[in-house]
Structures are given as C-alpha cells and as structure tokens.
Length: 517
Image (cartoon, rainbow, N blue to C red; front, side):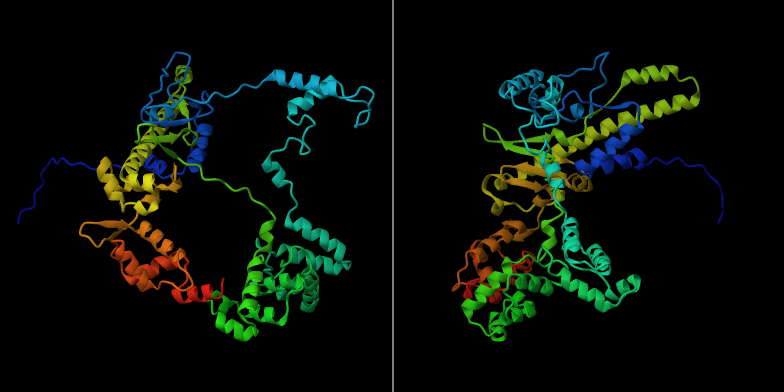
C-alpha cells in the first residue's frame, strides 16, 4: 500500500445559514405583535430605517390592486408593504380635525349660559381662553367622566385590595389584628383564595396560629362573599352561609362535590336525604355561586384577536384573500439620508457602519416583503382547498396536511408550518387560526372518501346535543350513527373525541337528564 498526496477538485451544493437567513426564517413564524416589537427595535437601532406614515389607515391588501407610488428625489424608497403586495385597496379617508367645531361649540356654550348666573367654580364663568381649552380637551362639560375612554374608566375602578382594606379598617380595631389582616390580604391569589402557611406567618409576625385563625374568621365575613377561602368547599360554604342557606343537607352536598362531579345523583340523594326535586334545587343553587369571587375585580382589558388575513366573497362568487394592512409594519429606507451620510464618512470605521446599516435596512424591507407574500400565497391555497367549509360550515371541513399545501405552492413543508403559526384568518364564519384548517383524516365507509377529524368532532357534539332523557347515545350508538353518515370510526376514537370536548359518558348524561339538570 502506497501513501501519496494528490490534489482533487470537487463540486457540490450546500445551504449556508447566514445570520440574515436565520432572521428571515424567524420573521415567518412571528405573530404581528412580536413582529411590531422587532421592527420597532430595528427602527431605534438603524438610522437609515424610517416608518412610513403616509397611509395611517393602512387598509387591506390583496393580490389584484397594484400601488401607483413611485420613488422620487424627495421621497424615500417604496416601503415593505408596497413591495409585499400586488394590490392595495382604496384607503378610507380620515376626516380632518375640524378646528371650527371648537369655536362653534364655544359660541353655543356661551350663548346658552345665563349671563346673570354665577359660575360653579371660584369666581365668575371662565373667559374665552378657558372655554376654548374645555372644547379642545374633548370634555366640553357634557360628560361626567372628563373625556376618559373606556380603558381609563376601567382602570379607575376600585380593586379588590382597596375594597378589603376599607373593610379591614372598619371592622378590625386591634392593631395586631389589622397587621395580620394586611398580611392575609397579601397572600390572596387572583381568584381570591388564601395561599398562606399559617405556621410560617405566625413565626414571622411573632404571634400564635390561633390568633391568625381568629382574625381569619372576621375576614370571612368580608365582601365579596367567599374570599379568603382555602379551598373550593370552603368558598362555596362561605357564600351559602352569607345567604343563610347552609343547612345540613346543603353542607352534605358541599362535602360530596366529587359525587356531584361524577353525576352520581343517587348517592347524593342518600347522603343528603332529599328527593329529586330538592336535589335539583340544591344543585341549581350551587351553580349560581361564584367559585372564583375575586375575578369580578381587578379587571384586565381583553385583547381581541386581530386577523392577519381577510377572506371575503366577491360579487362574481369566488373568494378574495386580502392581507390586513394594519398588522404589516410599513418601513422604508431613506436613500437621501444614506447618500448624505456616506458622503461625509471619511474614515473606514464610519463607512463600514453606514454600509452595514444600509444593507440591514434593505434586508429588513425585503424580509418583510417575503413574509407578507408568503402568508398571502399560503392562505390563498388554504382557501382554495377549504372552499366547502367557507360555503357550508365546519361539517364540510376537508382533511388537509402541511405537505399538501407545500406541494401545491412549491414550498417546503417547514416554511408552511412557520407561516401558519400564530396567524389568524377572518372569514364570514368567524376568526380562525390558520392551524385550525390542518386536521387529520378519518376513513369513510366508501372507498377513497375521507372526513376531517374536526368535522367528525362537531358531528359527535351535534348528536349528543340532540339527545333526550329517553334516547341517550352510548359510544357504540354514536359509532352506528356516524357509520350511517358514511364515517368509519372506532369506538375508542369516539370516546377520545368526547373526552377532549369534556362531554361526560352516557351513564352520567343519563343521570343528569333524569334529574332534570
């Protein structure tokens, strides 16, 4: 065997994951909220990036209306949204601020106010300057809320802590009991339950555990009823005691909540020593109670889901897919500023910095363009394959996989998966996550026919909702009904879908319907 050296040339292809490519892939799976945070950070760091505020209303964008904007000497380049779409719907005209309205309102208010009536504030009725300031502030003296919006009025409501502190200072006079009460208030969770270790708390405060328990007895009488409970049974018992309904039968029902959860009404009647009508009334009272009394306070503003794509039917009957312009950041590269700064950059370090910022800005615009067009392309294919769902409902949802969409639009399956993550579609039937349309398939009775798993779940729910007290369907009965509809499904699959929808078994449903619940 001879060992020699030789020189060989080989040609091959490989994918190099550059930092910019990695960032572009990351942008695909970001939600519009995360994307806005990312773009905002880039705007702060890159002086060559600007936010395009020429069209504040945004508007929807689809694939049929092309923007007519051109780059000029006095304008920055086309922004990311202009490049991302092939059409732009006509923007809604924003009504300009009518400055004459303030003057008209001032004159009307001054005319309506009696001249001989003294002002409600110290001194006489404010003069013209004060009147104009009221009109411009939006209050105008017509509302009691001072022109606050709904979110401001909501934040001004009393919190649970404020309510409890008011009752603490009124009901407890001993300083030690007040200190104990303050610590117990601080140990409440968001539902109003007490999550405190009495032994550790007594050691920290230097008192006896019995003193803490005695203080807790006073706190149990506070409003809202049920707060400071240590478990669900105690929470319900406190509310029933406040309503003077904690009789022995109801106490037995509270102690056997596990039987109530299993719908074992026969055992409950024996332990509570009541008949069917009394048990039904007792259960109705339990259902009227609040298991989490603190959630009525400390309101949090609900964040509505903002769709990334709109789907609507056009006049000729087909479906139009539009991007939501409000969720797409509009950024652009300021070429004039780049030319002026690069001309004044004399040392190598400054030139490299300006060049790096320019390349980064161009890359971000292109990446946002690619992200938007990819979302539009994927959604159009989803709409094309799920047209029956849009027209006739969830029972006609077709089984669909990521690979089917990827092959149809000639993209990689992982790209489709990233695009459909954290993205929402708005259509006449509601708002759905794009992942909702990808479901597994269930074989049909006929060869070659498949059904969507989500459609089968809805069919099972519909069959159970249509039950009566004398016709409760077992899992085997559901299988037979589904077979009559052409769906070949196993009993264990029906049970799995039923449990996933939190529907009790046929035995529990029969007990509940027999008791009239």
